[in-house]
Image 1 (spheres, rainbow, N blue to C red):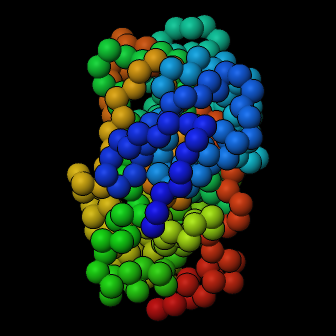
Image 2 (image 1 turned 135 degrees about the vertical axis):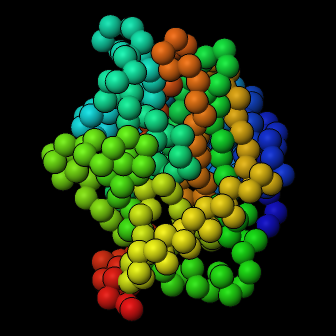
Length: 304
């Protein structure tokens, strides 16, 4: 597939398969439509974009994110709950102190070190995430991205045929139990994000490119015995996160990175949570539609 041509931005590849750095734009100022159109085209082509040196405040980050669609509201228990900006941080925004290691707001972030895609536990999952680095630690805290389109393309034909028929259940409580504990979420928090079905393969409606749709939130395959479905999900995740499919971003202060949640997975790396400050702010663009219809999910669940 040929890449778009650009006149108003500069695009530099960061990985042979996906991810690019965008320069020549100042996102703190109003962005003209021709430049934004090229950014949108680059996003669809590369799935993950890095904008270095963008000294955005909350209002500027929100303004840019809204150009891509409606934004998600944060759930209970998150840093920034009930707002449009999530704090992916070990710093308390109220006190500016490092959050204690046993604070639930920090504990829930340990699951970010698992491969995942944002909001796949919602019926209409996220389209894009935009993460801004306000403070970065001296070491650690990198974010790795896996190209799920390349992972799909590299599957054998019979595996692709199988995967296109399958639906997985995604469950926020399941993923948090992997790194914290089974009863970490309160009943009210669980009720806010009940398990939802997601197609195992999705296509970008803007360019038709297919991708595997996996995440640590995916607990099992509907209609399959749990152990068999779990084995397939583990196999696909191992395949999708091969080193040749992965780009790791080493954060610099004021980097803005945005990624397509239906074409990539990502995970954070550990840093010294108790001593080093890391303040990242994320806006999340909602998806356009569910990945699977209610009727198709019901048929998948009823399959034997």
